[in-house]
Length: 104
Image 1 (tube, one colour):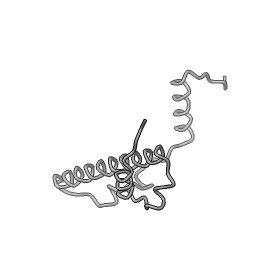
Image 2 (cartoon, one colour):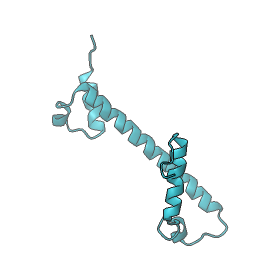
Image 3 (cartoon, rainbow, N blue to C red):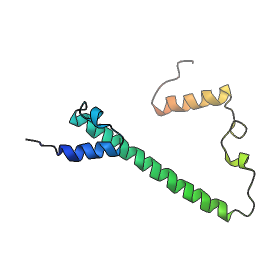
Image 4 (cartoon, one colour):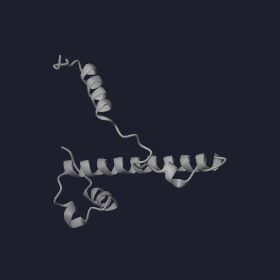
């Protein structure tokens, strides 16, 4: 029979922001999902911090920085897709998935 260490589970739930009164309304499976989601969030956060450190170092090595707007994603730097570009992409996906072109 599976037994749970409820005080430990309550402590872990509190660490991820689950209030004690809400803790008791979750099933063990739901608590497991909450813990998994928190683990994934922490992993993403660590990846973001590593990426930030990489960019800081990269910018340190730049001889001359461009204006900040150059590095920020926005509409000016991203090329708008034309209807023809979109059609080509759909055709490639269709071909890759084994579909056939019914237009012909």
